[in-house]
Image 1 (cartoon, rainbow, N blue to C red):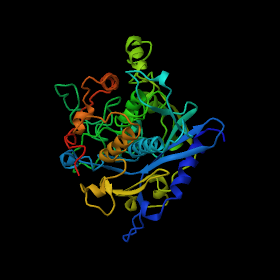
Image 2 (image 1 turned 60 degrees about the vertical axis):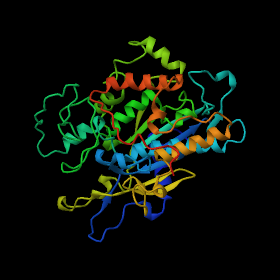
Image 3 (image 1 turned 180 degrees about the vertical axis):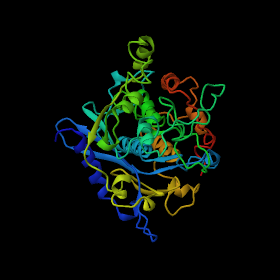
Length: 410
């Protein structure tokens, strides 16, 4: 099958169609139609068919005030793009746990000669695998600002507030101040919604071009070297060339940190399997049946669709329906409601693999301790990559508050 935007989209859309109705937008009693964004990860192995291995829907985000109660059990960011990447991390960890020989379709055991202090992970993606991503909407934040401007009744730029001492525009929330481009934005929300420091999907995807798609937890087990996104597919209606170039390309806001401008830094990253790896953007004529455009078709302005409050999450081994960052039907914060892609469950998966490998158990007590370097060269390299790349993303402010829960607490 040729690799193009339509085929990648079809792969994800077909996987979504197979989900049960409880994981899809509802038929409401008030006759309102619901819409929701969809994202998915598709793997391409040389000579084989495209295969969707992770997908998610969603558009909600946890307020900053609720983070201290999350305790690793509640998802902070339930936007489809971020959930799909978390689901992909879960898929890879499950593939590692199920690996019986030297390799399977997508994951392999690394040879001893490949291992080093900077890159000690026992597993990696199979080398001829390419990673593709489909999104039914332009990622929120910088990549969608032109679309946001075009949707305004009054396109007069808002007055920009003074910069804070750290140079960040503290009032630049969501889609506000849409004339400001090339900056970090928080997740969009209603003006009366509690504030969040969760960064936009545009900013998080830009960062993944430096750190790979692997989370910190997954990077303990898998090398980042072959875990970078190859392509991003968007519906043609959501593709603005200037916005995508500005947000993600080496000639946009990320230009200061390239191989040519910082070769010493770049060489240091490569020792640990990291590099600046920009993805190609493809387009598709396909539209998701629950996209805002599809659901709005034929409706009067006063009958515009409403956002769905549920998220679907799927891999070949995991299927969940989520509400407010927890499994549907469970109280938020309840351990039994923790998603398979929550911090706690991903940590448990990593520990199980470490134990099965007969390696020394990671000697940390809290999630905060996990993310601190403490002399670990591999972690130090990853932190250096994140620090350098965040400097390019103007206004990045850390989202903290869910860091001190104990890893082994019941």
